[in-house]
Amino acid sequence: MNFLKAEWRKLAIINYEINPEVLLPYLPKGTELDFYKGKCYVSLVGFMFLNTRLLGLPIPFHRNFEEVNLRFYVKKKEKGIWKRGVVFIKEIVPKPALSMVANAVYKENYHTMKMKNQMEKGEDELLIRYSWKDKNWHSIQIKSENTAKPMEENSEFEFITEHYFGFTKKENTTSEYEVCHPKWDCYTVKDHQLKIDFQKIYGNNFECLNHQLPLSVMLAEGSEIQVKTRKYIS
Image 1 (cartoon, rainbow, N blue to C red):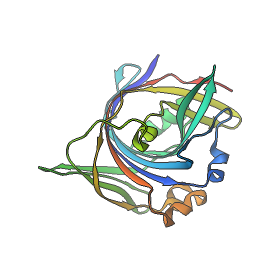
Image 2 (cartoon, helix red, strand yellow):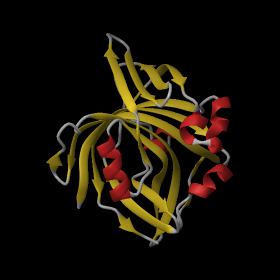
Image 3 (cartoon, rainbow, N blue to C red):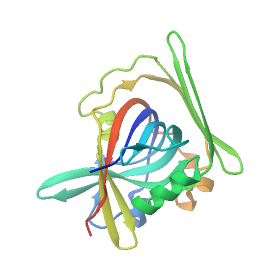
Image 4 (cartoon, helix red, strand yellow):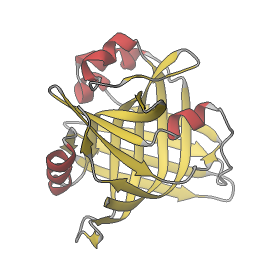
């Protein structure tokens, strides 16, 4: 059953390498960390939710909005087949009702902050900017070519975007939900600017990211998506 249908568009993705031990306290039971070429990734992702429908119904005043999240990558073996997914450290949205529903239904760690976005398309350049505010404004900005191209197989971009399950840890219980979407096209990134205090937004465990350069910066076009109803697996 589809719990949610929407479009995820213009996904700005900032990837960092992180010590796997930092993520172990957040790891849901029954899953294990997923690595790309021996590296453990954590990603800061900003994007637009568009045309959002909950249980098939549009949500008044909550159809189009920004989200910024910090996530890492896991996998779970089921009947000899690996399910690859993500675990969210924190998800930021601009409206309290969104946080309330997501936290109640999916047991995620949603927080409400003031947010805004900027999108500008020129003749040969695309600018995307997502901003969010606690006491101060934080932001992700990417400049790219303005035409998206198909992803390359076995690429870093494919690893980051082809995790189709969300896993949630709640005490000793793990739940999962499936996210369905086609493969995403990607833009060639020309430049990026990042203004964020990881310690203030995500806690002391992620203060280390304040002193690191990203491994990579990506911009995905996105697509229509479907989020299935969650189920408990342990």
